Length: 274
Length: 274
Image: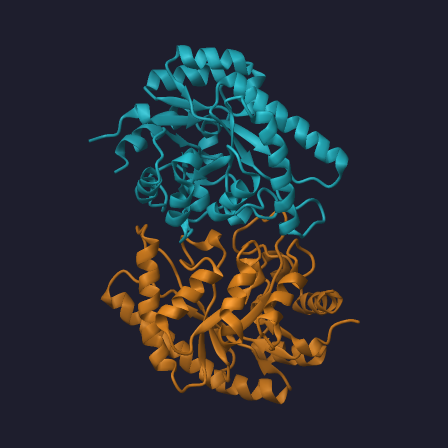
């Protein structure tokens, strides 16, 4: 039986920001999707409070906001800017009605080589930000990124490492899982069990293209790569995730296409996933 | 104090195979290096037994042979070919006088998505090959590859996973460590302690370029990337490694240069590492 499209949420990066948010919302609703996950850059065409209302009117759920992050800093001025920007992101997530703000935590500062120091900064900043988020209804979601981003995007490269950060920060913080980042990890099932429903704040699908021609912008559409998406989904559900499945395809190839075509391919492939 | 060049071994891939092996051997000796690690393709210009003699005459140590591998197979015919090829590689390593044959174990067969099944095949084939290697003086070295190669090159993506393979295979098998593959791993120090001197069969240095423009052929020359090579070297030595440091730079950029220039850069940067 084909899947219920109401279980699918579109991460707006998948359409390459070719359409203003209003048009993306309308297209998701028309296609029968259940949810949407905007990026902060989408607010350039529609402020978050208005987006919240439009998304609700369209019968869609907000599954998250992308993204907070780049928490590693070289000095006090940068630290202050990081805190300001991420507090603002939390406020935007609250206005949007997003249950979670997804974090790409950053990594080595220019000229730096100390991953452990970067991780310590991430824990310190997230601790500060969790105070700002308290009572907002927005939870902070640490997304472990694929180790190929360890130098420049995320010093948190595995689910276990992300959960260690959660333990260190304490409170209401959790993790966001994306198949693209974690599929290779032999400890994935154990990590998901460790996370449990209490710490799973987001569940993203994307697929791995062979060959991968670019480290950032060459994901495959779901079902067209080599990741066993169904097996990982089963682990995520077994760990307690009951929310929607958000699809986020960073791809120059897909981003060059008509967004209507990309959305149609997503719908077709999601329904066929089995 | 600059490092002793006798502690440095050149992996011949670093020079892009522009020179026949005889010339590479002579250049390493002239530069004052302590060792060399050929690839099987180098035997196209000089058979392994002759290479063994020439390398010894030049006062160099063989630190390893690259490589065995691609052990995952789709059927009995492929399995048989895999065994034949890798038994031949072990024989070549023995003729060369290499202490270890470095393995890139392979991953998903065409159309496959099951990493666990691939890992099981790797264990089964390595068990067969360890019988062939017994008494040869050649040890089998499993190299965990960076997770960005999990789809097409290696289903073994972490040192812990490689050590699990060693435990399953038993006997004299061990691991080969390359900074390029493992630098991001927060469990690296623990894995090296677990490996210990008994299971460390190779120690490779390469550096990570930011940005990385190609998944395979864009390594940085040592000292010119973001990896804390010294910190990892310290962990490797603490775990009991007493051998040479082999440098292996896969890089289209370096491979286009005059090999003499690349070797000079390697010597300069190795001496400056501190």
